[in-house]
Length: 341
Image 1 (cartoon, one colour):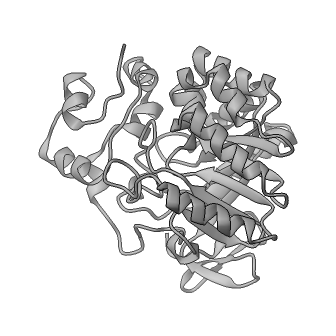
Image 2 (cartoon, helix red, strand yellow):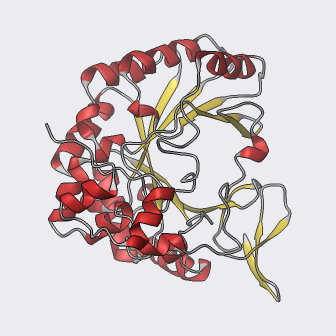
């Protein structure tokens, strides 16, 4: 059975990288994991996949505007593993392990073997007590890390606890698993995701159409056939998908596989990720051109998570403006925020 590659030596032995000193420094700081499915795509010459998962010496370059917590999770965390940024929803970060570690990840300082770890039973109890005691919470978003790395038994146990909280009506799981490790989407896991009396969705993170392999399509079909709503989220990445036609092909692939594209994220100011970022004006031009190529349901919202924890905002016309100091973004509270990315 082929295993996920989790070290620089493993990448070198597989012939995917050279173990140069600059990469040693990068992989000492940031976790590495590439699943067999993604290794196969890299070996087939899919450069967009290689760029997402193979460590790069440029990750050692950080800028003053970058932050280990670029979207302000800690600012809005009342308890370990819980982020309550908006009144009606919370993030529950059950674990900080992933099937793959994306080189652009905004939580790259928190995930991996040396990251924030998995919540203990006591910490989970405290998180569920907080959710149960806060009637305004309408949606719980399970993220991490990747919650579909949990066993079906543990996923079902989490769902059963959420089923007991009447004011929680929506449950959303954010995951890379269906595309990068589709063999994990078993019939047992699909059954575990369903929660009696709740609207359940899975937000699938994919950045390039090549991620939709035949096995990924089968895994996604198992989820859709079970009545689970599928949403898509994508990060706009230089060197991966920062072209209108590339994005259009991706969003068509999502729609064809019963995934509703939800968000196209402008890349966050995570440390060592500057080589993935492009100016907002360039992103707007790429995104704007999608309107003439795709039907409305296949077009996600182009959004930015404001640094400092000020929330997610659309960055189309009317939500950003140029000033002498740089770009300003209008946050959900109606305040203009300076963005220096």
